[in-house]
Structures are given as structure tokens and as C-alpha cells.
Length: 110
Image (cartoon, rainbow, N blue to C red; front, side, top):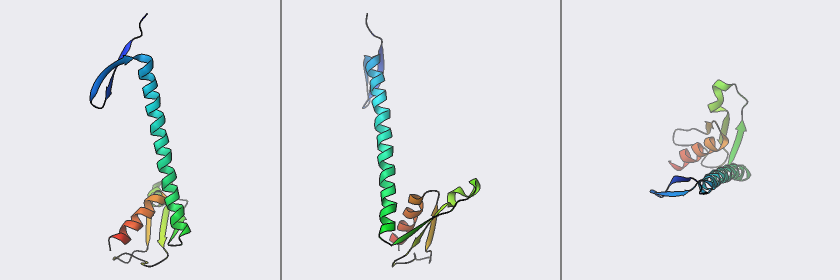
């Protein structure tokens, strides 16, 4: 008895492979994507912790209602340059990394 084949697109080419192999490829693809997402989250968290440890940034978490979620994290610059060219010293975001990256970008663009 032969197993059913499945068409799989890999690097722009279509391959006919047995269904069990296609299922295993899909499972591995999902596992790799999950691992990459976890690794990215860990790197983002480490970037925030490093910023706090350097004493250059203060990170503040506000517990807000759902309507204000995009402003639930705030960073404040604690070392020179203290503010951007528009004299902003605080940046907000829906996550700590978003707020921190906004602040870093604003400081870098001066």
C-alpha cells in the first residue's frame, strides 16, 4: 500500500512527498517558528534589562484600562543626553521594548 503524496512548496519549487513526511515538515516548521519567537522575546527582555542595569533608562509600568493599553509602559532617560531635540524625556508604548526603542530612536536622531 502506498501512502498519499502531498504537494509541498520549498524555495519556490513544488515537491511531491509522502503525507507523513509533509506532516513532519509542518510540525518542524511550527516548532522552529515558536523557538524563534521565544528567542526574540528573550532578546527583547534582555535589552530592557540591560537598559535598566545601565542606569541610563528608567522603565515604568502603568496598570491601565484596556483603552489606554498603548500607553501602559513608559521609559525615562536618566543620563545625558536627557532628552531629544524636542525636549522629550519620556516615551510610551504598549510594551517596555516598544517604549525603550522609541526613546533610543529619538535620542539617536538628534
